[in-house]
Image 1 (spheres, rainbow, N blue to C red):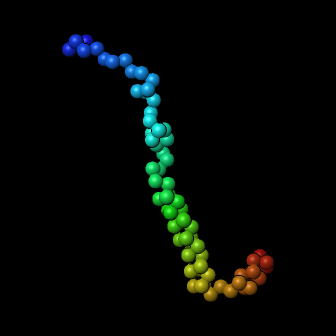
Image 2 (image 1 turned 135 degrees about the vertical axis):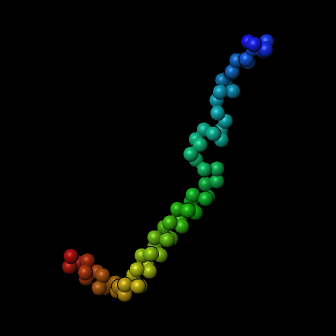
Image 3 (image 1 turned 60 degrees about the vertical axis):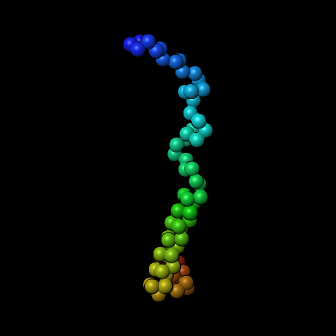
Amino acid sequence: MEDGIEPKPSTPEETEPDDTSLNPTLPKNPIVPSLMFLGVIAATLSVIVAGYFHGNMHLITTLKNAAAS
């Protein structure tokens, strides 16, 4: 080498990733994606319920229309 220092050979321990970087796509805190998923479900259900009340839909009328189609 130019400066007289030879590079140290890498060992398998140095080249293997540690446990935290085995799968970088997994979140470090799994509660956050779970809460986001529950939020999407809650938002979807709230839109359905709001449309049900806003559209003045009655259960019997909805079932009759579904059976007729």
